[in-house]
Length: 205
Image 1 (tube, rainbow, N blue to C red):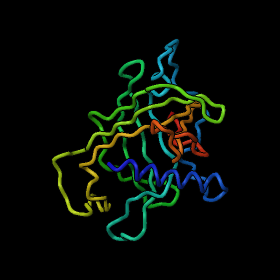
Image 2: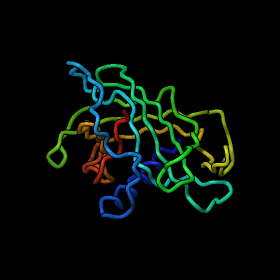
Image 3: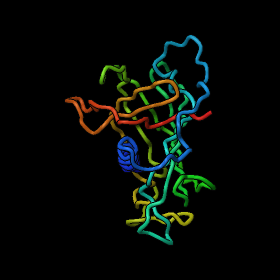
């Protein structure tokens, strides 16, 4: 799955929201309920365990019936602890025909298998403690080959949607039930040096 495309679309949406544009989707605000109790675990991975979702944003996908109009989307992340510094990840993109991501969603194929988040260190960005991590997303089906686009369940996908694995460095701020990813500016090691202006993920109840 082209997560870099998803991340770019989501970052653009967050920038618009931070500047006062766009509406309240009602689908991904930070929940009022606290997240699950992780006990006395000091592990860096503990705070990620559970299910998270992006806000509603304009995706890189389109309906076959209207290929020039991007559909709205959310993407959920399910983190499972593997060790003190590592988690397995299942990423589930969903697309909607509505502008606020309400109603029935179409689930696109999810990443699984070797997809992971590994905490590699810590840093301070704009006075806040962040984790330095490496995200790895496995290809959904490395043996699948297609042309420039694929149509699945009426949704037009990039031709390499099933075949591309991805790995990149990221910084993550976890504050309560909100996760914020890093911006585009990178340091010499390849980690972002700034945070996005609004949370990237919120914890699901």
